[in-house]
Amino acid sequence: MSVLSLYARIWRTYIAWAPSLLLVAVAVFVPLGLIHAVPVNVDATQLDLGSGLRTAAALLAVLLLTTTGLLGEIFYTGAVAIALTHPHDGGPPSLGEIARSVSYGRLVAVDLIFTVLVAVGMLAFVVPGVLLFVYLGLAAPAVEIEHRGIRSAFARSLRLVRGRFCYVRAVLFPIEIASDAVTGGATGLAHSLLGNSIFAEWLADTSTNVLLTPFYAVAAVLLTLDLVAEKDGAEPRLHSSPSAR
Image: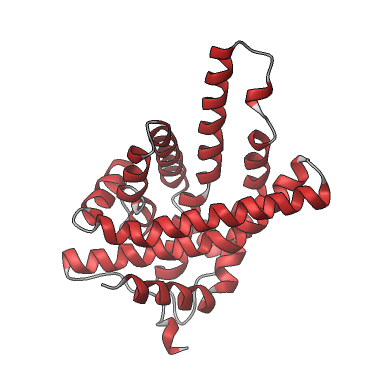
């Protein structure tokens, strides 16, 4: 499996299914954008606290930023897994069909557990956070594609990535880093145009998530399908081959 060829498939899939991907992204990230925007506007280091409490507050702020930055990304990935693999004649299912098919409880739990683990791992000298991000990053597609429970989905992700860590990291990690960088640039631009406000944060966060998170979600779904095929000899299929369109 080639990283470059997978990136090409990710791009083709994004373009082929853009209307469905973006519609689901709007439904997920418009409300979540407000949740993301609140901690960004709190500068914990400027609070009137002692040095020890100020340090603890700064660490808590980092934890909140990392957690809210990832919050929704895994849930959205599960929804995209349904959009791309749900049995349907011809095209993808409608937003209503996706909404009725989502395993809300399991996906929300996977989303929260994943984001908290990665955030805590990032505080623990970064490396544990990267390891958790890669090894557990396919849990959401496992929930929806293979109808797994929470613990089973995390275990499945771990098994799929084991032996392919560098490959999965080379696909998912650059997308995440690039998305964060673009979000940071968009946030700076929004602040320069609209001032230092929650609205500016919400606008930048929501617009970048709607446009960029589909790349991460499609990558996670395609990786899951490829690794399932590699390890089990069979895989659920996409609705059609985007490259044939």
